Image (cartoon, rainbow, N blue to C red; front, side, top):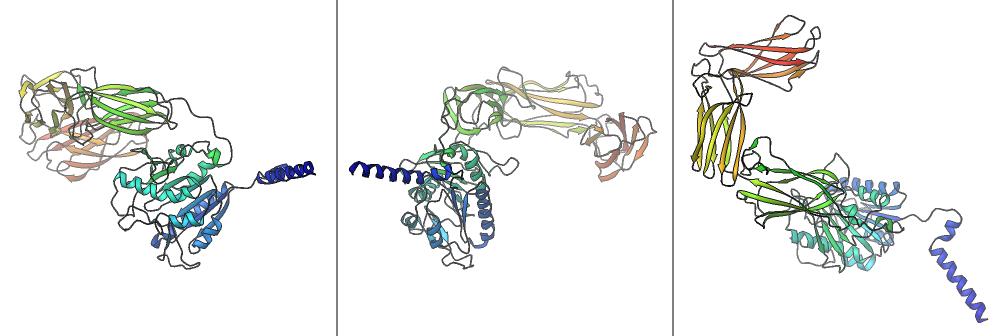
Length: 599
């Protein structure tokens, strides 16, 4: 009898186990029980309609993935209904008001804070009547699935920020808010809590069903190309923190420099989407990221004439090569720790997330305290870390900072000195030295020949350096019409560099979107005169294959005129000449020809 009892007892245990594992359903070819999603949308004053749309989008996404979805939407999002339907949910979503801590509304208690804002009575359509049920109520009344995922969408406080319009908090306050808000949900069965200020939660739902990544990997994914970069991973200044409220849990924040703390992940970051779906986790990632390229180039307007083996940039706030740009190429998505040093001492450090392949790294030449660095040689060191925590080999480059020359200018950049009528007989070249240096300022023609030495290796103290160019060469001879380059250079103990500026020695300039025009098409353009004209200039167009013709000119002021150039289909492709003739207010006649191409 004892043996028979043991056999019967074993059979009963097996049957119970088979039922729990749904083996009977599998044996009969039936689908396994779908995962359960509960979507709660509470009243949110004037935002209720918009928040209902957010909730519908997430509920629709869950249903599209085959989940069993329960919608608890305003005006029927009451605590009784949430308590009844949230039990055992694999995915719990809340969209509504957030009442968190720290906040301007003391004292701290969790009877109403760090929970849900619901309808006090079923069917009450008043959107301003919100009943708050905090973390204490969650812990007492609800038990989620042991591996549940929670999404808190568009809440105040949950991701770090307070209500709209309130100041962006400090980093420590933001982390406290995230930690406090997630604690109640982690205590009732959630493995992770996504707090998304703006990001569409449907992105997370789709990733949970489609990816094998960890929850942290899903959190660090950029979604939806072509839309706001805040609709997914931002990566400008992320940070990891250990939870204070939930021992063993971690917090990952992903703030925006402009909008504050919009994204956070709390809980077990290594928990995977495969595990959430009930499968086996993917094999661990053990391959470290590799920096395959790190290169720095000079800005186009900067001329490195000394110590040229190092790239140069000139951070001083004048808009000319103020920012260093480095090309980086990575073997995989990775965080890159950037450390900038001078003589072995740190001046700046930050971490950025870079996508796989080519990306840009920039530095504005400032220290951690926001001040510009001094002149000298700096080392830039990059250390990559992937999402799995694998650390790759560092890469480094050196750059030379020289910033003594500030805001060089040529005014006007178009002048006509040949007629010597006093209207536009020179241009003024000016710059400011912020440190003592040896200055050279030359004029070069289109073939890179030096034609005028305005300032030739002269020692200058800090202050304005300026001279006037009258369009003549070093021998006093008037130079031909055309485009010239004004190159200003400063020599400092740290090195020598210069900037190139363009100056045009001619009566007119043609501004157009392109130097070519398609057959049969028109192109708008502006003519600028170096000297004020007595009237409108005459503009003739000479296109191959047809007789030259005059076009209409619209006057903007005495020195600016609008025209429309058309490449007539009766003509031929090739060269098109625009001839401009005008009379200045002193009676001087001026002409210039511009060459375009018909294609």
